[in-house]
Image 1 (tube, rainbow, N blue to C red):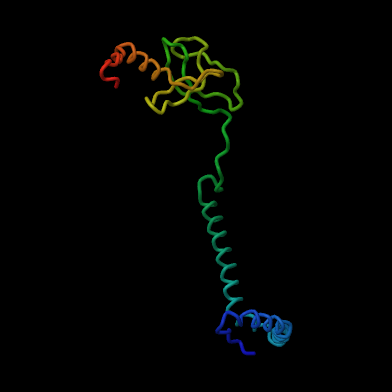
Image 2: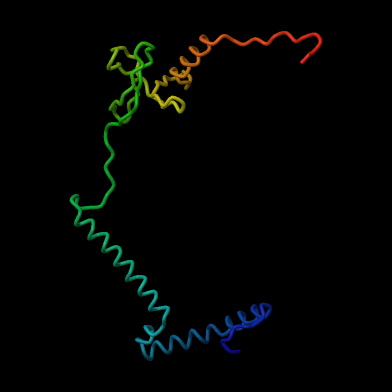
Length: 174
C-alpha cells in the first residue's frame, strides 16, 4: 500500500495496521542507510528541528547566566528571608486606639505589646475595616467587629428616636 492516507475515516484503522506491520522493515532500512552514510541523519527535517530546539535552550540558559553574571549581586536569586516581620498593630485601649507598624521577630508570640502612645500593654495585631478603612486591634478571643463602626452605629441609634408604628385603625386594618 502507498503512503497516501485513506480518504474515508473507516479505512483509517486498516491503514494504521498496515503501517505498523511495515514498521520493522522501515526501521531496518533506516539503520542500514545510517551505517552506509552517517551524515544522512542531518537530512531529516525532524532531526534538524530537534537540534534547533536544543540549541535554542542552550542559548536561553546561556543568556540567563550572562545576565546573572552582569548584575551587581553576581547571581540572579530571590531575596533572603529577614529575621524580623513588619506587622500592623493597634491599641485596644478605648482612649487611645492608635495603630502603627511594629517590627517583631518572625516567631513572636508574646502578645500584648506595650503601646507607644499610652504606655499600656494593650497592643495586638490589627485588621483593616472594610467599611471605614481604619485599622483596629483583634485580640485573641474577641470578635472581629470594628469598634469605630460600632461607636458610629451606637451614636446614630441614640441620636435618632425610633419610629413607632401607630396602632392600626379599626376600620382599616392595614
